[in-house]
Image 1 (tube, rainbow, N blue to C red):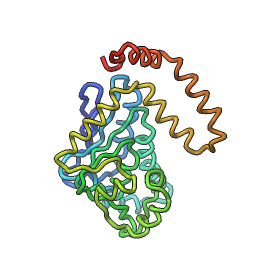
Image 2: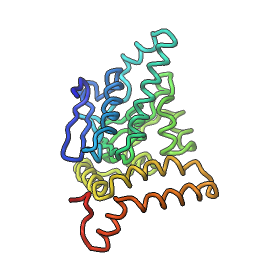
Image 3: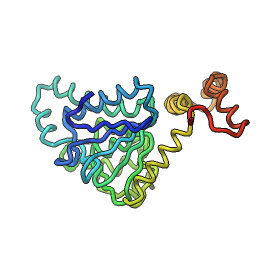
Length: 260
């Protein structure tokens, strides 16, 4: 596929999806929303891709939604405005529900919807000086469509402060509150991304996809309700071809087939 606002490059089993509007700090408009949704739908159907790295070109990851575009949407009839907002929400959902693991490479600014993207990916890695913020209240709005993704990462308690104040915070604070997995000096960011990608590629691809689904399924359950679900889960999974290969490779002291 060809894209107007994304740069999509395959490097073997790793697909790099880069926001490509550097002149506006990779702020997203309707085209970005639709293209990100399409790109992640294509990933799900692509057997060659095992890991996705989401990043941005230029000096910032993403400054969030393009305010000129947001202003245009506000002027639409009510139903059209609501459909536009739902398309944006489903873009975040497409990233969060991607069957392949998604690593975020964050730097510069990750404000508003950029913070939402950090919450939607599986493993967010950022530079220590990356600037985050749920800054929507400064504009008279709220971080509505990204709120469920952000609250899953940082919890309701921290959201009560950050949603209301709109304050900005750096990568170290983002790591402290659980928004990102690691914050490192900018010079070390690519190495941190490469390490995470390497760890993911060393794992069974079906197992990684199953782990993502396990979190989604078991997370809301009580300990008692989880027992039949998790028991059936492991019983089925350990009988698969991939698991048999993993067991055999470990016992034979060799790399499993998916690393060949």
